[in-house]
Image (cartoon, rainbow, N blue to C red; front, side):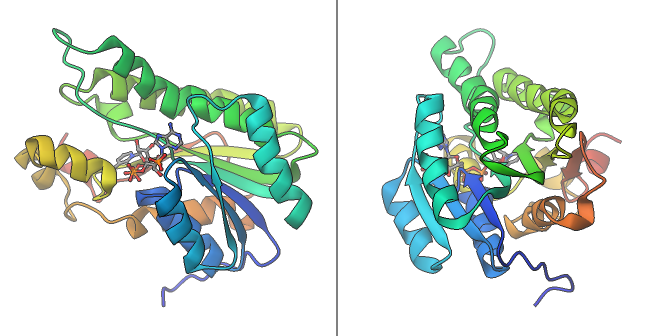
Length: 254
Ligand SMILES: NC(=O)c1ccc[n+]([C@@H]2O[C@H](COP(=O)([O-])OP(=O)(O)OC[C@H]3O[C@@H](n4cnc5c(N)ncnc54)[C@H](OP(=O)(O)O)[C@@H]3O)[C@@H](O)[C@H]2O)c1
């Protein structure tokens, strides 16, 4: 048991990108804390497996690249009708991959931006509506330390994550009228489906391992920050980016 326990009983959250990695861990921890969770992603098998882990987790299949406002509304309204308005949402959907300037695939580079940034904007447009979410609801988008440092061979990913971070600062103003909050989290290197794939392609670069003062992370190392930002203990926190990186920004850049 950890030092801090959150009580989200009677609260409702959407987690987009819940079939794997950080989103999956956040969905599980929200449900363990008593919340109803709408878990959104594309992979039906992995979503089913997640929903089987807790009766409080409800799965919805949706592709953030193609989902229209009507698709988002249908999925989220169904959940709201059953459980009540949202107390917040977490958008973790993202893809990564090399985009070297001399030979990148333009369609892939656009997909990187669409998944992390525009998909989040389309989801937020629906999740932040008055009839969908409570006043004081809290939203989290996922950026990355790559959005701050830029990473070799990853210009599209780094730019998408910088866009998320900058977008959040601006969106905080849009949401303040209803006292709704939005923040971003910038993780360092966390072992998930995303990083396992790139490790398969090129291994973990030695400088990345060395840069993380506490070693590379696990999804639970980031989930605590997400739960805090969703909780009412963070009710005066908005428009910020939170780096959770096991010391990477210190170890690699100082
Ligand atoms: N892991 C790291 O080291 C790290 C570091 C910094 C930032 N981040 C960021 O943290 C977030 C979560 O990363 P992760 O490591 O947990 O990655 P992950 O394990 O690969 O999970 C990504 C999630 O996004 C979903 N997703 C991707 N494309 C989608 C689409 N078109 N429609 C719907 N869902 C989609 C995937 O679900 P389906 O495939 O089922 O659709 C999956 O649930 C990402 O935004 C990532 O950029 C990760």
